[in-house]
Length: 132
Image 1 (tube, helix red, strand yellow):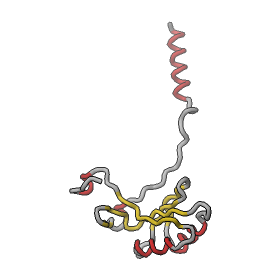
Image 2: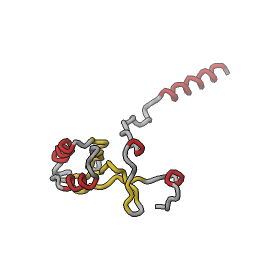
Image 3: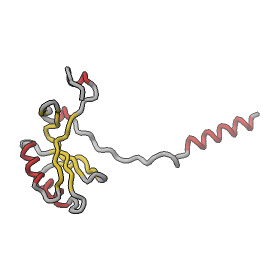
Image 4: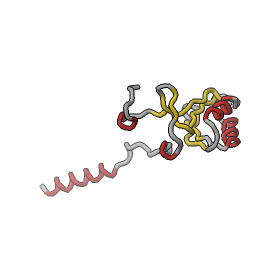
């Protein structure tokens, strides 16, 4: 009886230490904190970050022209979407989001420049919100 208990405990211990089936941890980007920036902007029914853009580029051209433009504009890269050929950037203070959109739309290889949409999951965070 004692051997069965010890064997069972050893098996449980072995399985608890096994890491073969666990996925590798991947770093996650730091989310943009809306409260750290200017108030969000509302366009129609939708709410957008006042300083974040999502930009998609043509894979055949690559991201080099876009990265050069980001540096020149003094924007900050928040996240690089490798599988979707896109990046999220924060525009510098004092620059308008509309001017930034116009600037990045002219960069070679850029397919789309979009505002970063804010989607509240809890209606209490936005008062009397309408459903999406």
